[in-house]
Length: 305
Ligand code: ADP
Ligand code: MG
Image (cartoon, rainbow, N blue to C red; front, side, top):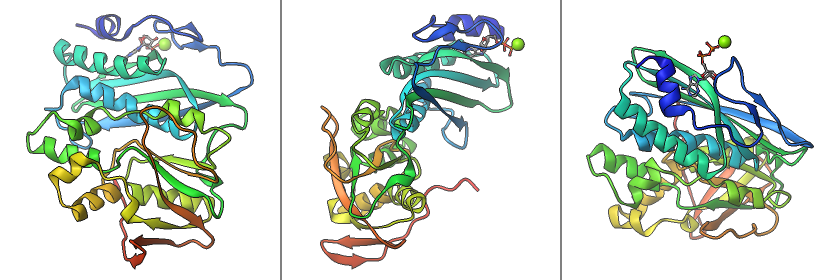
């Protein structure tokens, strides 16, 4: 198959909303909604760095889309369009079909159209997705908006994804922990309901603790974090001790859950568990407590270099 066959067969799903010209020309032409700002972000996943060649291609496609959608959720933006850049060692139809199906499933579940991309040969598989979203002017939720006294909330059960990855490395697939890693839920609909309610947000990609530090640093604030309030899933507690589950929860990455601050309780959304885990303080320190007792904890999160 040449690259044009690949695009036509696997990636051209037809034009969606707001697409004047999609796949097939030198650039896509889009119609953003009036009164909205355009938001964009990119994520790359590289074989050997982010995933093993043995990973199910459909899971990989789903995961790549979910990671990008999560960035839009963290900004309280509506994801609209995506560009895919794909580099493979060979054009393997079985792999491409699976990957495209997983990607399409996740993007279409959130109304996102694939509007173009790039296809090339490489010595190692590399997958890049650019996502475009929109939010009414001034409505995007930033990392920098946290105020003293705001509650710190988290969706879902951070840590499950890292535990699922550990299981997968040992060859154990299937089950809720593995799904948390392979097919993370994108919190887009939940996040849109928090516009005008939440004060700051970040999605958890490098670990809850490290990402909370980033939010606090952007907001020039400190926090008290109550580790006894961390939402530990039944699944993770079946698999490891409480202490290990807390370590996964604070330092595991790729949860794609939302960590956000809000002066009032968040707006509920069916199926989204939300937990209050601390509050924002003056100063710049992040202090941890376990059942009221101060504890020392530090973790830098996942660093590439
Ligand atoms: P150009 O050479 O002008 O950059 P290409 O010939 O590489 O364009 O691509 C042709 C069309 O197919 C473009 O619209 C491009 O956006 C789209 N495209 C290329 N690769 C992909 C892909 N992997 N997924 C979706 N669309 C793609
Ligand atoms: Mg061109």
